Length: 209
Length: 414
Ligand code: B12
Image (tube, rainbow over all chains, first blue to last red):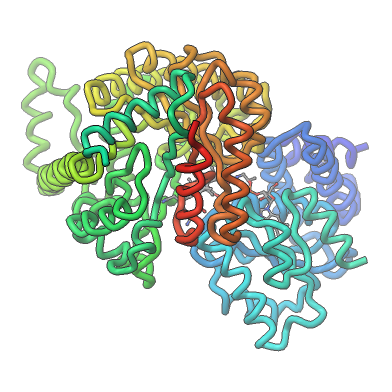
């Protein structure tokens, strides 16, 4: 019951409700992992489905993410590490010289609500920093976003740099952003392109299946 | 060979015909170039131009020696660094200061220059809010304006109000303003001179009389930030609407006063946050469109021609766009199905667009030719079409730009 309520609170972006329900749930002895998986993330996943269907838009995703974050902050110390079952690990970044992050953040949210563990490197991330992060975190997937024609070429540089570093094998690479196309993806030797965030989550699942 | 005055007149007429939905002698071509002229000439860097705008003359002459659009940019996009340093503007990062690479475009970065709980203040007294909070937050060298409040000069208060000018921080800020004002004026004079030169040497009319923004975007871009304003539709809906009304009123006055009587009537509106992804139709109808429509209509009624530069996808907005005066507004699209746009706006408003940046930067010459031909086939019949690129052009392949112009010159002829 409280899990359902929590999911709805996230889905409707009701941060105050989330902040009230989490302590209540903890006090009632609900498993913190359930509060996260069956409450918060379930709500985000439901919203993701509606975003995909074109029923809700960026503002709704933003307020839902805000509510979700408010909830995870309250759960932080309560969760037992390693208990989550992740569908896979993703490192995501907006490439060097590019500060556009709204699309990247949507992709991130969709991946998280689909069950991926996502490490966000932020925006304006230099080629070497991406390579380093791949070396360190050993993700299943690297996801890159670029919104400028002048920065999308860095996606290519990163693919090349990963090859040189011997990190390309076994890594799946997804790219996206407004000017990016399937054609470009094929040309630079990335594994998958998707024009939108829900598509990105589907593509990530497909890459690992 | 027609002289430049004849070329100039023919270009003015060609574009005006398209706007008024008359089939012109050929499709006008008006590409929005950003850094392209610099990369194309490959002599000076963007940093060089921002440091010394007089170098722009060489760069733009080189551009117009090779390509003659029907309306042309003067070098206004290369903001002078001197004025940015003088005011300590916080909105931009630029080559030479923040970037090691001297040949990348300066970049706008968003900030929350008005907090969510400051709407009431801004609504009650916009001028005071701008002077005491927004300007000091936006320009680090103008922080002293926070201490000036002329409202206090009423009656005996003038003693205290004016005494604020003894404060060194206030004095420094005003000195900076005097200096920046002169630097800006010198630059504006240079731009005016380049426009005159463009007319004389190439017969190319200037692209703009002025620039404008959707009222929602003025608040989103300059006061709140993209994510913040999108959430404000939930957190502060009534205040947001009220501030939009305030902004619309002064934007209308400002645009009509500042853009009338210029060589061309085109007022470019740069739209950002009303795109398909960013809001629902209901939100667009409530928060974005009414103020923008009022602004467009008022400016068109004043005899100017709004050119609505739609950044991003607008496939789900087409039904609204014809709610403005017929034959007086241009819609310049980035990502849209142009056939659908033609269907929705044909016979009502001129449409413009949208050779994709991807094609120009990564496609072949033939891709470009095919794309331009197909755009002309789709959009030209019955008049009301101007060819433009989809986004602002930075690193396009020169041979593709060449192919784009050539195809318009030949295939675009009536
Ligand atoms: C909002 C915006 C901004 C905001 C960014 C705010 C922010 N925090 O992100 C601000 C105002 C700061 C901004 C600044 C600039 N911008 Co801007 N901006 C836009 C605009 C209007 C919308 C972008 C957006 O957020 N869309 C909504 C999101 C949801 O869509 P999206 O990002 O495309 O993401 C979706 C998909 O692409 C995909 N996706 C995205 N990433 C990924 C990754 C993967 C792995 C996958 C699978 C999918 C995927 O899924 C997302 C969700 O469905 C675009 C126009 C456009 N057509 O995109 C211009 C645009 C991108 N900007 C442009 C420019 C030029 C700039 C500036 C350089 C301007 C300047 N001179 O200052 C600066 C550069 C700043 C920088 N260094 O990045 C140009 C680029 C032109 C070009 N030649 O490439 C555009 C195209 C506008 C135009 N028509 O000219 N901008």
